[in-house]
Image (cartoon, rainbow, N blue to C red):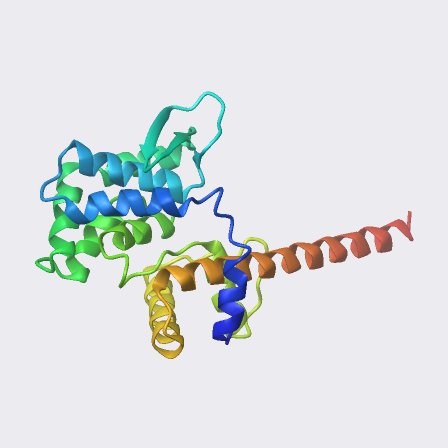
Length: 225
């Protein structure tokens, strides 16, 4: 298990330019104050998804939209069609109403999960992020990097294509984050940033190992040419 100091040290290498904390907090603040699925809530949810996808930048060419958060002007770049489709599903009024009900504890997780599932069936990470943005202090962000860090902690193999694939994976990882939160007195956001970096390092090791093995295989084939 990564220690408290390892997680905190890893945070120093977190890419805060690609995933601005100011922008993240700005959007979460709007979601926390929303009382109905109005244009402001829809925009905050949409913008947070673009942030999650790494599409929010301080400097950018030909942005599809620009948003001022605090004193900073951020530019949003285009997302892949499949991701855009998922975002548009997420901001439908029925899903936003469900998110507010979940945030206010009037809709159980199991029920809200059904709304999150409707966003996309191609990946667990966007539905899990939809869960996160309405209860960011209880449910962590899920992506391939933090999942790689978790698998590495379990002593399981990590490959370049390692990624979470199911709701069971998300609940398992959520339990792990809750444990780290209690044990080390850290916030979920600190854990997310730290494991993001640790997992990225795991992925880099996997890339190097796979490249080395591919080079060795190519060399062995060459012996018989």
